[in-house]
Length: 234
Image (cartoon, rainbow, N blue to C red; front, side, top):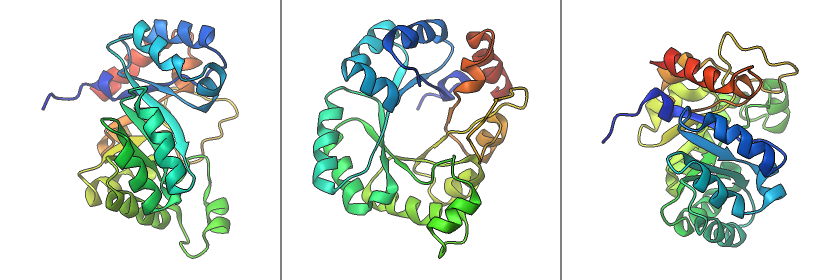
């Protein structure tokens, strides 16, 4: 197995309103990050063809399709089959959809790695306790959902840096993707991420990949910011 480099760990989310804007950012970051993430905003605005355009622009950069599928098993299975034809390298489903739903996704994903989203990093402890009082804390809920994802055959988990160490120790076979990453030198105005970690903290805790958006996108030189994070990881 090839050793993963710091750059390979970096996932940049193209959370942008259209292809013109996304293309400009992807062009500037090509070769500076290992992955581009296509989420709901860009996918709905531009349609499935955006993946082909992105692959043509940056053929060496992998694509993470972040749709967070969550519906009945039959619907998710059919949606996953359609998504797999676009040949993304990774795609997300919501772990809260249950084992049967996740298993339906895995069965129709072909070569695409299915990631289970556990608890969104935008949810703070107060909201989580209101939603799941029996769990008392996000860590307990994440543990339950991660176990179900493993049972369903998912290849990875999306969780906050606060749960990374426990998840990697408990589910070492699953790839761990951590969003809500905030370098110590980056200030994000109006940040809606509640459970964050620095890049170094996340990797030391066991993260395989880091989703880093605004600290790179809002920098004066996004490519320089991405390289700075890679140096920090190295």
